[in-house]
Image 1 (cartoon, rainbow, N blue to C red):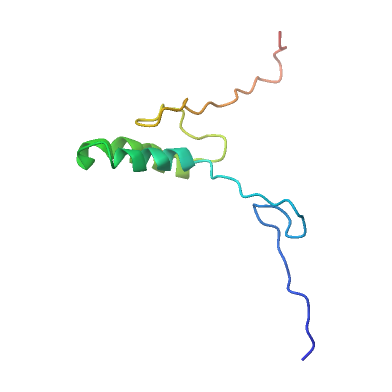
Image 2: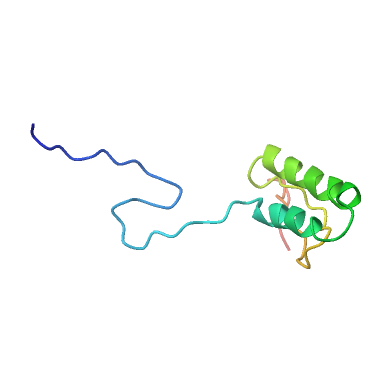
Length: 92
């Protein structure tokens, strides 16, 4: 049987033929880390609902529309959205 090349596809980490492929973090990783930190902060029934709600909102949202509420337990700045100006307005 003759060998044939294995078909390759593009992946989120880049083209398989490139030398410098690097994985990228998912846009909701910080929300998941907030859930993990909540597991160590006391009563799970009190600490988990808030971070889980925000993680679910993040996963359901489209890229760029993630929730901007602050994290419960991580000491990170909350995510921000870039506001789009309407086409008719001029920037100062």
